[in-house]
Amino acid sequence: MWKQAIEDALQKLQRNIANHPGQLPHITERTGSLSYEWDGNWDWIEGFYIGMMWLAYEYKREPVYREAAESYLANFQDRLDRYVALDHHDIGFLYSLSAVAQWRVTGSEEAKELALRAADLLVGRFRPQIGIIQAWGKEGDPENGGRMIIDCLLNLPLLFWAHEQTGKSEYYDIAMKHALMSQKFLVRGDGSSYHTFYFNPENGHALRGGTHQGYQDGSTWTRGQAWGIYGFALAYRYTGYPAFLETSKKMARYFIKHLPEDAVVYWDFDVPVEEGTPRDSSASAIVACGLLELLKLTEEDDPEREWFAHVLNRSMKSLAGKYAATDLPDAEGLLKHGSYHVRGDRAPDDFMIWGDYFYLEALVRLEKGIQGYW
Image 1: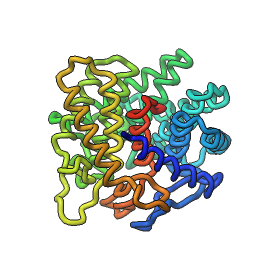
Image 2: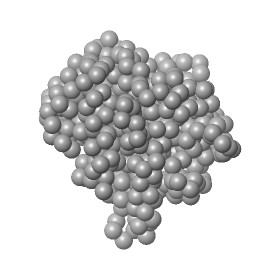
Image 3: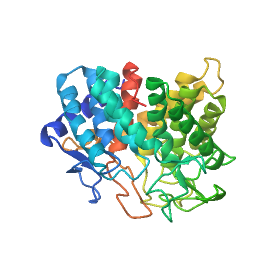
Image 4: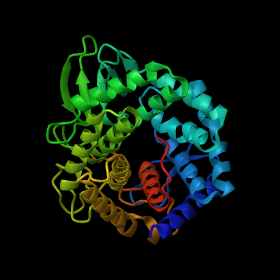
């Protein structure tokens, strides 16, 4: 039932590859535009485009997707060599979906070595006095020196993968410690979440929860909640630690119980909903992948399996039927009504390349069981 949605997505992807050779999509500041901004490799989002190519290749086995994806490896190598805009934790978003993906699909040793170098860079952001991977900025940064954010849960698979490849315990230990700290300080008792949390960088003392892109410090930013659902499910897959699975399920319950009628969320669960309040289709696409992961990891007799499967199907039908750009043949993005940074008035209602990636990941998992590269 998902074939037509996939075919439309792949047509758009193939046209983007042909129209923008060697370039990468970036968030546009022109609300309502049908196109991305196309530029070089300097943000946190470029890996999603390459990940889409690998998903497309695994689905269709057409050389155009593989050749395009492989052509960018040198670009990602160069970025790491020259350390271009890498003072952040999003190394996994960049290199799991490019280098690790290429290794998983083709067995490329060059891609494997690049991914291991990227993992080492992420290790360098671990702050042992706190027990976290610092989200943004250099060590000792006055604002961010003791700050973690929930997004980083999707960067941890790069470290777990590096441990599997090398046997070096440091990769596993750091990922495990950060996941435990995320569970303790970012997830509230009711299953909602903080976007960020601050610690004293000198002694590691917990200070306060906050937000960067959510409505307010005590609210629940829906994309952050989505990162938590998928991220803790992946942490359980790699570690087998039961509390991570339960945390993922707990966060999923909260997300599901706060869904609007069409099962695609607004940008924050606590924002007053008025006419024109932005959605975030990308958050719902991430959660679709998280629910697919939960269905894979839970026992057949788990009482919540049927509920999770029902919500997954309902949400994906809504995304494919109402939010996908199937009615816009010239559009470069796949999912309409994604939001980036609403409070900062940055792309509050547009295509988001990560939304496109997770939407495609969910579609090909549903249709052919093809997994992502986390």
